[in-house]
Each structure stands twice: as structure tokens, then as C-alpha cells.
Image (tube, helix red, strand yellow):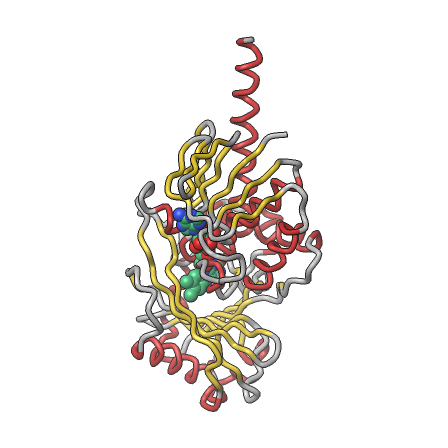
Length: 360
Ligand SMILES: Cc1cc2nc3c(=O)[nH]c(=O)nc-3n(C[C@H](O)[C@H](O)[C@H](O)COP(=O)(O)OP(=O)(O)OC[C@H]3O[C@@H](n4cnc5c(N)ncnc54)[C@H](O)[C@@H]3O)c2cc1C
């Protein structure tokens, strides 16, 4: 049986460990933190799953990975023992009257990019953007007038997902989880953890920003507020388009709404700033006055791992696969990124095995 090491137990590392263990590989999973510390960037995410809306600002690759992941989530989540909050009830994109020109721009950009993508007819049918009167989707947001509705989009609870994956990993005879195991060096077949130099059939590097010494990564700070409100009844993931910033409101069970997220080019993990709080909260209040009496029950800060082109990296050479650069879309893209990483790993490792066998 092949033994692989995975360094990093964020969304990428956990999904990879789970899928490889299911395929029969022996997995050694290393993370510098304790399993339940919730320090990884993945724990901060809002869990927005909106490949089409992201097309406005993102590269087509993000859409491709995202839309494949939507299918994989539907296939993979039922295989988990624990339930994970996952909904595909559509997303709403809207703007205030004075910013409606921004909404038109958003619509045109996404339409143009979908045409360029040459999405096949069947796929395009399920990937529509409908021009709607906002009140038909969210009656309490009628004051926003016109909006866009994207039925194929949704959301997931990343914390529940990470915990459900940890449960599978803990209960798998194929995985060994090394807590508080900081890896100082990662290379093909090898890693260094503390004073030990370890050798494996394959190494996967999923350290996010922890791989900065080996990859040209930059940190993009994100701040997010969790609000609790009994005066608000919003059911769909709602984005507010604004000339200076984009905010979203993500409804969760038990009257919880996530409002986020800032995007600041900085590796700063300090608490949420006053400026960011003001921006996020005033935008939320402008979406629904009921947020005026909401309680701020949690504030979240973390830094996203981004590469220079803002695209995900899956880099496979013999003995080493690096998965990184998940930036703003790690939860959205991870299933498809992991699927591709495993495909490349199997291809290269089998190919090389064949070469060795021929040489013998
Ligand atoms: C506020 C905010 C909101 C977001 N919202 C969304 C969203 O709605 N949808 C979406 O798709 N994405 C979202 N994201 C982005 C998403 O969170 C990231 O893309 C994703 O978490 C990156 O996952 P990862 O596994 O690559 O890295 P991480 O989650 O950072 O995991 C890396 C792991 O490696 C470990 N590690 C690092 N160095 C070492 C070392 N030397 N030795 C051992 N272990 C090490 C770390 O402890 C960590 O556990 C959001 C991000 C932020 C900050």
C-alpha cells in the first residue's frame, strides 16, 4: 500500500486525506495546530458557493472549478457520516437605486464571460441569471427594486464541513493525524518535522500561507461579522453591489446572518478594524433596517492564500504535489481542485511505476 503525507489540514488537506483514504492509500496528515483549534483560513470562510456571480471579477477557471465542485458536493456530502448544512436555493444580487448602473455592469460582465466560456447548452440552461423584482425572491428587501437571481447557487457551512471531514479521518483506519506537528521543510518524497526527516511515497503540500517560503504567495486579509437578528427574515444569499465594495449577507439557521467580507492586501491577523466594521454594518443596515437591533455574536479575521495570478495552483512533479492559491474561493473550488490533484498524482505515480517496472 502506498503511503502519502499531507501537510496542512485546512479544507484542501482534509478533503484530500478523506478522498485518498477512501481510495485505499495510507495517509499521514500533519498540521501545526491542534485539530480543533479553528486557526486555518478555511474556518473563517462564509461558505458562499456562487461560481457564476464570481465570474464578474474572477477568471473563467474559477467558474469551471466552482461549477464542477457544486456537482461533487452533491455527490460527496451524502457519503459523510455527519450532516453538513448545504443549500442550493439560489443567490440574489442587488444594488441601491443610485448604484443600479453597477448592477447592469455586473450583468453584462457575467453574460459576456459565460459566452466566452462557450458553456455547453445543457449546462447553460441551469446557469441562468434572471432579472427579477427583488420582492419576488425576498419580500423584506422590496425597497431594493430590481435585482438578479441565480437559481443554481448556494452555500455550505465550512465549519460543519471541516468537522465532518475530521470525523471521517479520525474513523478511518487509513489516516494518521499528527496534531501540533509543524513541518519545516517539504520536498519530493520528503518532509522535515521537528528533528525528524521523514520519507514517503508521495508528499502533498496543502499549507496555504504556510508555504510562503516555497511559493510566491501573498496574504489577503478578510473580515467577517456574524449577526444574530430575529427582526430580519432573509432566506437567500444576498450580494450588494456598490462602487467601492461588495458585501454579502449569508443567512444561516437560528437567525444568524454572516456579513462580509473585506479584502485587504495584508498579512494582518489582528481583530476587525473600526473602519471595516462600519463599512460592513452600514451596508448590512442599508440592506435591511432590522439589522439595527441585531447582535454581533462573532467577528472573524483570517488571511487568504493568493498567488500572483489569483488562480489556484495544482503542481505535480514526481513525489510532490502542491495545492495552493485558493484565495477567495477555497470552499467553492476545493472538491474540483482535489479531484484534479488526485488525477495528476495517480497519472504521474502510475506512469513512473511503469517506467521502473520496464527498467527492471
Ligand atoms: C473572511 C473570509 C471569508 C471567506 N469566504 C469564502 C467563501 O464564502 N467561499 C469560499 O469559497 N472561500 C472563502 N474564503 C476563502 C477560503 O477560506 C480559502 O480559500 C481556503 O480556506 C484556503 O484553504 P487551504 O486549505 O488552502 O488553507 P488553510 O485553510 O489556511 O489551511 C492550511 C493549513 O495548513 C496548516 N499549516 C500551515 N503551515 C504549516 C506547517 N509548516 N506545518 C504544518 N501545518 C501547516 C495550517 O495550520 C492550516 O491548517 C474566505 C476567506 C476569508 C478569510
